[in-house]
Length: 235
Image (tube, rainbow, N blue to C red; front, side, top):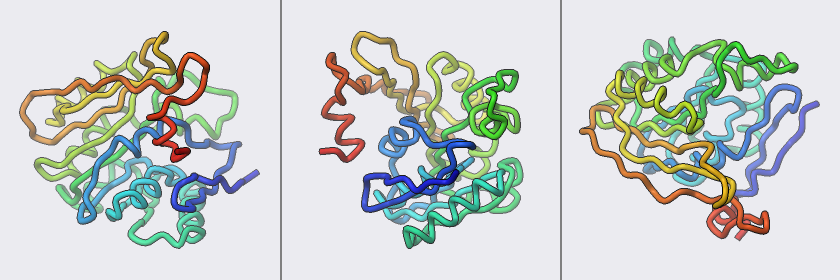
């Protein structure tokens, strides 16, 4: 059931299996929202098939380390790495709770994560998709603890999360000295409420947050807005 998808950016391709989990708009938006310098060391927490790692590496040339629990998904990421002849990307089969001991506290400048969104009690029919979408193997607290330890003081964490659970995320971040510095909400159209938020947090930063203008994905005709089209490299 595997397929090869065109990421429509710098000829990148990604091996995916629809029977497991395929990346969504959230990952594309997060990769465009995140910032990294060429010299930065980036960790992709819960890297899955590697879409965030490939897009961020291609855009910034920063080195990216992906950590992923599921071996079968990691195998797809490594085969995509070979397919793309990617340089500066490494994937490791690892529980995120073991990552600080493996790489060392403060080993990274930037962390990026598109975490499972849903409570572990919600289970789709396709069991292979449970771990990708539901917090059965980790909690948002686990993610924040991992990021706090992997980032050095002043290091940045970029995440995407549902607006309905934003305060839960903010508490976990604050408890782990990951203070939110920038938020941008995303909504399908001007007539709809925001459904996800793109977040930048900084380890050990002072409390101050910039709320950016919302990202509107589609216009009144259901077509991509100009900004969304640029994010998807359509224009």
